[in-house]
Amino acid sequence: MATVKEGLYYSESHEYVRIEGEYGYIGITDYAQHALGNVVYVDMPEVDDEVEAGEEFGAVESVKAASDLISPVSGTVVEVNEALEDQPELINQDPWENWIIKVELSDKTELDNLMDAAAYAEFSQSA
Figure 1 (spheres, rainbow, N blue to C red):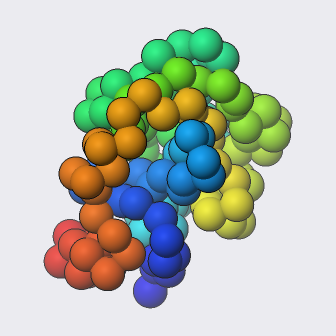
Figure 2 (cartoon, rainbow, N blue to C red):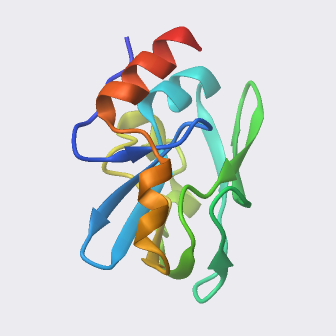
Figure 3 (cartoon, helix red, strand yellow):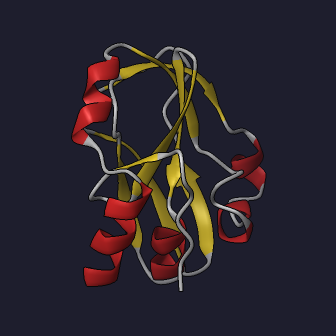
């Protein structure tokens, strides 16, 4: 059974965002990394790139499949998790600690369109 963390926001495409002040840390959920299997590559945007809620910002490739990454929020990329360039499998070890990008949020009201932990747990069980 995949874990769901309280206090995060979740999208229907199985990304999460953890909010810290004006910043959001975006990654894939435990459910998503289980579904993908062993992650072998993470395609990430560049620092200063703009991401839009509901739009693709990269991809995760595993031995089984490739999956587009869809941003749950809009903003400017201020950091990418460079550890994933050499060790993409970190996502499988702990998707909650191994976020993919950090963005400066441009519109915090977009969080209202995302699911909380309880709603996501229910959603992912029915998926």
